Length: 245
Image (tube, rainbow, N blue to C red; front, side, top):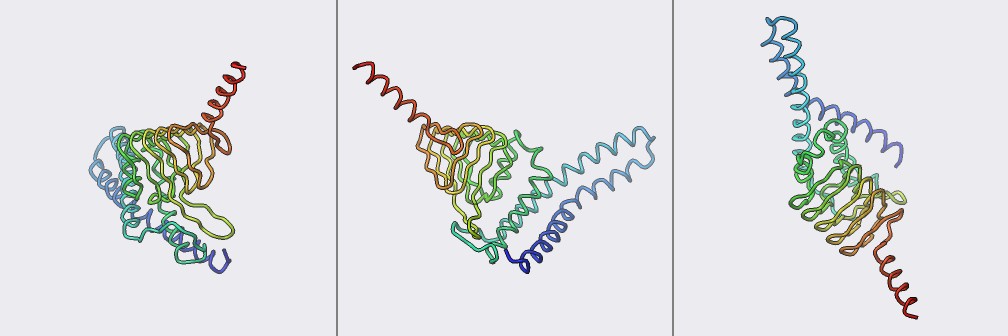
């Protein structure tokens, strides 16, 4: 990206981040000011305890306010369609813009929502299509509107699901489709354009390359991920043929 584009964009992102965080902090700060006023006549120990609780609650108010701001702005903006775009383009700027929103939520609050199910609600509000009874134990998901996850799917902690990749100076957006009753292991990486069939398994730490099509009920492991179920079945058939001869 040219410097004359990158520098203004970075300055804008910093300004945008300050505005978003400042807006999200406001409700919690107002609550904290109220708590300070209400406890002004308390004895020091009781007031310290009450102020500590108020600070903790103020942080929670900030976190959910940040989510509300991110969701509201994301829903106002038009959704980017799958395709290829120059980074130095209006589409590239919008991608940076929406990515900054999810980055702020991820870094400041999302860790506290993992394993609660509230993170799945947040992902849906940001545009992801997630089915029933899904357990998503990771926050490393980008391009929410390009992500589809079926019912009863389990995604392990620290797994990464990407709807974008940068190649040869271009931003490439591809949808990711994960079927029902799929298991994605700890720390796996799913690249753009991947389709994972129902009941398939992606092993821990595996890397599923761009545009890979994983058949239903298959088991993929490794870097890059390969179908080990086909290997085991082929080996079983080979051993059976060898034994029969």
